[in-house]
Length: 273
Picture (cartoon, helix red, strand yellow):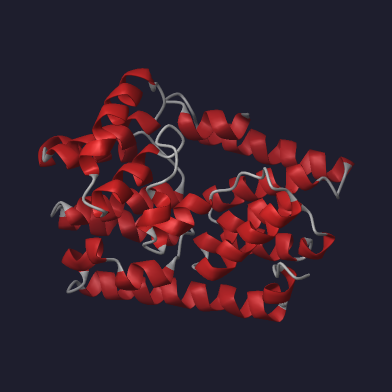
């Protein structure tokens, strides 16, 4: 709860993240095999820029065949740019528990599998769900639900919803303003801020987008395959600073891939295990 409140509430602070980490460390000291604690701690670790560490720790437990560990790996692998591994972790987790919920819609979105991402609940994933519908030429379908959620939502996610709605409505100025409000609020999640950076780049706010993306990579989101090909980032590609940060993302991604292969992650996440 410390993590959730620090991340999403407007009053959330870094102190809350510290309290969350202390609680997770205490939980694992009491029971080192508590799979839910491992998964939830991994979700905090990726927000704190330690996706590589989270992935390595969870892969070390993957052969225990625990669905919650797999759910944690869905996020950690994606942050490291290991999108196929993220999908494999979801598939293995669902094999172990058919009711398991994971963050796999974000993986679908990053792999441009908009057909699958467009089928998710907008109430659960309003931003990427709406953008996926838009990629399929169905953005208008998302607007009624976005407007409804905008009224109901009182957390930092509200401005993600506003950014998506105004983008679909063609209100560039308000869409950019909504993104800036999220960034200014202290929102920590590097993946969420990656979405905001590409959003700004898509709308032509090149320098703010580049500055934010530099922070994103520095803060531990280095999904290099997406950054390398995402057309929403095309306005940044001629910038030397973008080339530099792309190389940084690639270096971290390859380090994570080396660790994944060293730990035989493919076998650990195989549905035939």
